[in-house]
Length: 568
Image (cartoon, rainbow, N blue to C red; front, side, top):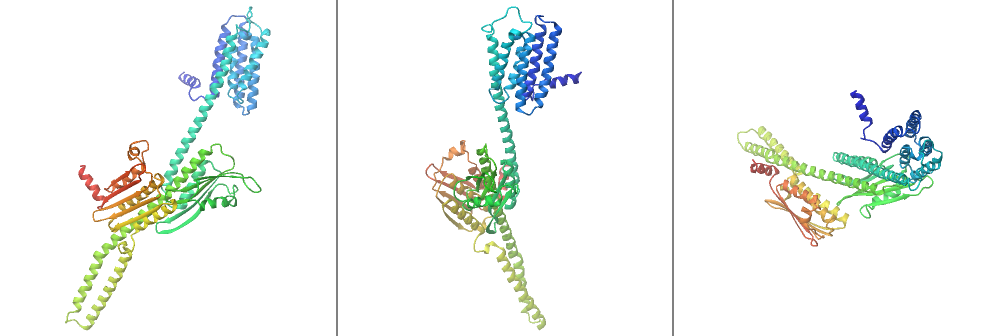
């Protein structure tokens, strides 16, 4: 019994009903109610006749729902609705004409026709039903003895019928609109999920070829493009200054052959530092040529122009703005991944240089001193008079061997340690970045380093480098400056960085506490704070911006220990 109740509860539940199922639910309920009223109304007709009419209508409803639900043709559905509309008008002849309760059941095909195109089809069905019912009214059986005139006595019936048809159209329009919005929302949620997955995947790859391959695959999936071309120029390591260019293609080989897209994309790739961010090219159909739309977005950051991303669509796009936004996001994500990879490779080089300096220092302080002591001790032995000539010669040979080993060891220390090199790698990396940044954006950059940078550890160098990148990028992107002055000074106690630009400036309080809260400022301050330092910003609208960063010259380990003592 409980199982039967659960089954009825499930069948009669309104949850998760689509418009078609909801109309079917209404059909059976309206048939049930009108049948009850028909059976208990005045017995103008025999009961067996009434029962037979109800049975025929139940059978008709069942067959109609089965055939309509399995039909995939719009024309067949319209024909079924038309046949049912005329059939219900004929049923009124046997059940009392316009006084029959089944007049209200006859509104079902009109409600259903509101879900079909064109929009006026439901009004056509309403007009056919009312015309047929009025025309057949004189031929109806079992009508009341006193015939009511159509107007004004039946005006209420016509008013309700017309308003019900109008309400059905409004209901269908609202449901269709909500369905479209639900589809768009579901698509956006899938889109956002895929973008988060793309960000997660990109963060675990450092090789430019791998980034390009993954980037092309995700771009094709997220935008629905038939073919995607990613053409990049990237530096494959901090020690390898030579940039290499390559392209990756995703999509069927027989769609948009290389000889069709290459002549168009190559000039855009070569001029990627200039011009608009997005280019749309419509390919005209021709002999052995594909038609469609090719959308190209430049992959560039504030400091580097890496290349282009092109997506091909064989047909015109309905939501071209959405596709452009997705492609732009993917291009920015790729540029950020390549920038991150370059920054990490530079940080690894700083760490490697620091480790090499440490090893060179230990060799110099320990091994070389021991060898020098050995050479000195052998010299003292050679000076003793009671040694034979053979032993003295052997000691001189050992001394020369030790002297040669010391000389070779010192040469190795000089090659191993950056302290003996002519140029500090950190300054070299900053200068190279600023040179590329200035050339890319047409900005005059004056860089002035002072002091002994060998006293900085790799973490401080990485923090200073990231602050320089963030501050200069903000000065160009948001400040729209054309001149930047940068100074890095290292003395015995601290390292100081100052980045000053002649841009438009900004209201610092509005940015830090208002809706335009800047993540770049937060990042710079966190970088300085993690190193035990401090970052200040001085800016006013129309007066440029000065970013100052001070980091003390002691290890991060010491900073952490100090914090732990203050917070037991």
